[in-house]
Image (cartoon, rainbow, N blue to C red; front, side):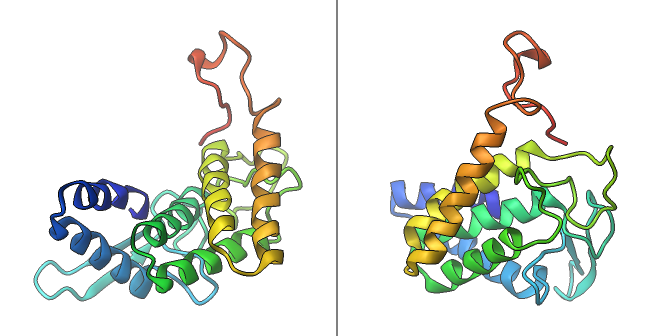
Length: 190
């Protein structure tokens, strides 16, 4: 996933060996080309033919449906492309992160408390699970992304959204009381 590319970019930066950075860039560029829909939501998995490299199928394995926006996957993309911009200063990665951020920020199913449902396209009932983990990843990415965006209004919108998410995550029902939830801080991570 895009989230894990830091495991390649950092060793390249520390060792001076460009092969890991080259792998990260190849993965990020392939992801932009093949994983994203025109609205900047993404499929969870793209299966490739091992011999030809041709796309066999696009699916959302852990989401509501193949055409839905699984919240954790969207968060991974936002964080991953923000991080890739930090590591490379390649404007393609900043543009991708901004577009993903706008998709998330403006999604009509993003609840008032800004903690997304497990999938942004899943039917919403009183029992539809939230994903606090996705919100944590988004908030981290939105804070960093706000420092890279030249447009002061958009930068502030990203930062405000992150602040709203962190405020929600810091209290019930998302924050566990001491000794609860197997001593994990966050509840409602799907």
